[in-house]
Image 1 (spheres, rainbow, N blue to C red):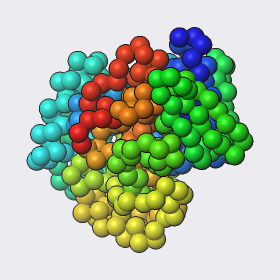
Image 2 (tube, one colour):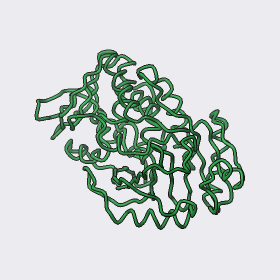
Image 3 (cartoon, rainbow, N blue to C red):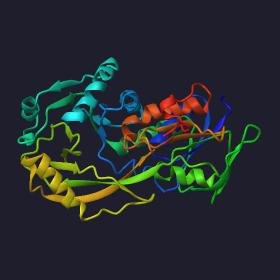
Image 4 (spheres, rainbow, N blue to C red):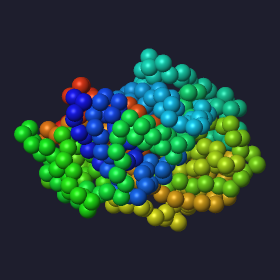
Length: 367
């Protein structure tokens, strides 16, 4: 076991966490990142919200374990990684029913989550005045993470335990190997042989699979926008993050103002997605309809990032069904930061033959 060499493709949250768990289990790890810096895409272009209340029970279990693991990653950080702001998820109708179904599981997983009435939610966040919803799920253990510091902590931990990080090293082709021969990864900086390969390349994961001659998993990147206001006198920096389910728009305090998203989804090629100026109009419409107390926000900056989904919107984790030396840590659907620690543990255990990934995340499942 200790002599296994694992090549992890992708230096974002999934790859960094997998590398950390692998080296802690005695594997030799080479972490390959195509860009000159790690985490330049989805791992850094997100709202940093540590959200564990997810209507899909399978994802919620991973999110809760991931949140606990983030506390362990504090070992390699110089400052607190999470501000425990709490979260308010506003729900009505079908969204309320779906969320209610997962709350007992959250409580069993030792997450404090309770339903509060609209009046109590509005007392907590006055900006909800005029917002229509039936109930709000309050999860005080949720919060806002310093995503850059968290990724740096994972990478620091992995490297301290012996992982090698190769930046600016893109896999251009390769042979996934088989039972009798190792995998071979071709890069512009040479060929790397490995006993196992982990595809953790975010939006590029299916691209990498194609370069290795493997069947694609149907992973699709989607563009989503974030918008930041300037300072807003009525914003309390201690507010939780607020997400209106169904309407799909959220906000949280940021730098004296608000960070907001209209939760847009548009299929987009892997890369650096430009912000669409028209998205501000979508945000304005959603805010006016959902949070009328926040109309006429002074949006100062907008940007976009990619979230990558499998067809059924569950993670793709574990052994590839066609290549025994290849493993997946992909399709994280915007939950990569929250779930990173647990995803890394699941994939490392799978790659080292310690335990298979849960069936609901099996790359071979019907989607």
